[in-house]
Length: 350
Ligand code: AMP
View (cartoon, protein in one colour):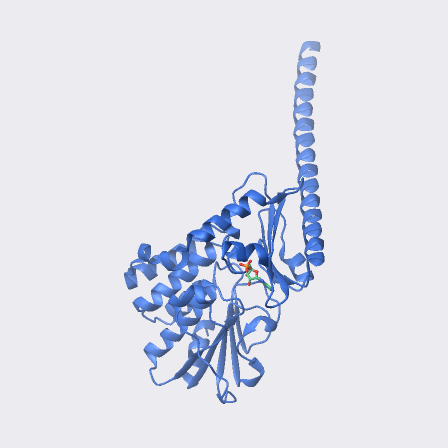
């Protein structure tokens, strides 16, 4: 049976379902979480569906989270979205549930569910929820369509990143035709921001350090954030905007989070894969977009150095390959000319 049909069968079976996602919620995590909640409730209004995790004040549009402290989950199902590792599941202990389903588009880290749908070629978990809905011939409501659309737009940065595929466009096109949502009117929910954030962005651009190997980084202290009146998530929301800068191959924003006593690293790359390095520092993510929580500035410096070395190594490999290709082409042309000369010589002897 198709895996999405199996999931639908389980959904029908359970009266109480908790839908969780990763800590540090972003539009894809929230969009998939609340869209799935709405899908289930629109079909089965009597079921008890809870969405859990710390609320993200920036993205209130998606909905508000439920508390499940007193809920008996021993006969309930938990669906975890957009979360490859157990330690980053926000607000639910999967061990307390009878049945667990995971739907995710990150490279696999922990296997923790009875049913796991992992497609790390999908642009977003919202894309997978769309696949689930269409596989089960579920009609999307406007509210579901809006959430899924924003989740896809958020994770692909408006269809800019790798893993945006013909399949993404086909699914989104079907979503738009079916729901007729005013999608251009939705962007404000993701991108509207106060002027102090724009000024803060200006500060970041002016003060980036760029290494000879094409690694750009900035250390954002708590003091600086207070000066600009922004929170520790603000820098993370700007990181994707450096994707098309000639001199930058890897870039890292390091933001101090005084409350949690750590430093948040947002890492992006258009060169080497960065998720293995992030994992070495207790983080993870995608090949070209990763993150980690670091214990101090010294560790942050180590991370910068490691990413700098990685970028340098890749540059050397690229130059070496280019050199071999050039030598190969020259050798080929030389041999071809030599053969012509030989033929000419033989003809002149005859
Ligand atoms: P961000 O820079 O926060 O947008 O995150 C980029 C990617 O890295 C996302 O797929 C996150 O899920 C992942 N990520 C961010 N921080 C961490 C972390 N501390 N541990 C594991 N994965 C992370």
